[in-house]
Image 1 (cartoon, helix red, strand yellow):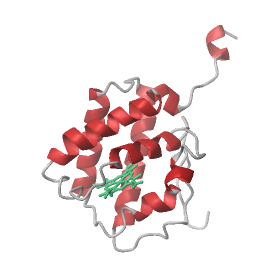
Image 2 (image 1 turned 90 degrees about the horizontal axis):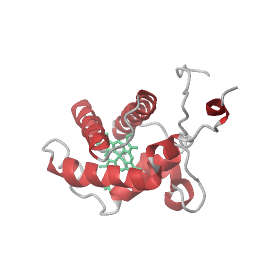
Image 3 (image 1 turned 90 degrees about the vertical axis):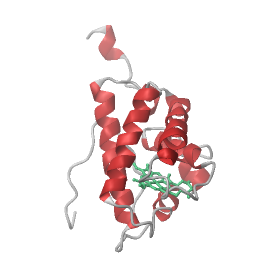
Image 4 (image 1 turned 120 degrees about the vertical axis):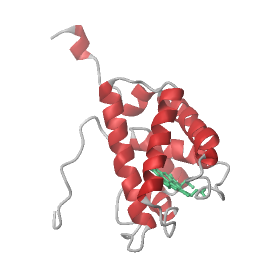
Length: 164
Ligand code: HEM
């Protein structure tokens, strides 16, 4: 086996550049893009000033970061808190799509890795998570405490089917 193959696989968070990289991402995303976007600025008008940091912490845990006191689950209320913050907001598909587009623009701007594997798994979570946010924001949200914290790996899940 080659020396290369013996290397442990870094988490997605480590590959991204750690929490600091995600903080740069969300600071640019919300501060520069979202608040200046006509479609999204009204949605985030009442945004907590620490919101970008909280989302960075959420993403860090999803991508393999700690869930102890320094992570989102213990430090910020976990999945139920995150899902609850989207309730009743009635996010439209157009807003969701813009949110994703601006986040990807921000990823380029702050220099997140551009390799296909990282961007595929990053985009996979963002697409899934933004669709979940839209569902929670709608008329018939699932119970907010019914789902665990999502934990994304390099390989992901089979499709959800009723009864499984
Ligand atoms: C992967 C996609 C998403 C993730 C990971 C995410 C993450 C989060 C988190 C972690 C919070 C709670 C922060 C806290 O207080 O601890 C939050 C709140 C919120 N999210 Fe999302 N979100 C996503 C998609 C969206 C989309 C698509 C929209 C709307 C277009 C949206 C709108 C909001 C708003 C308005 C809040 C409340 C902000 C505030 O008042 O502080 N989210 N989100």
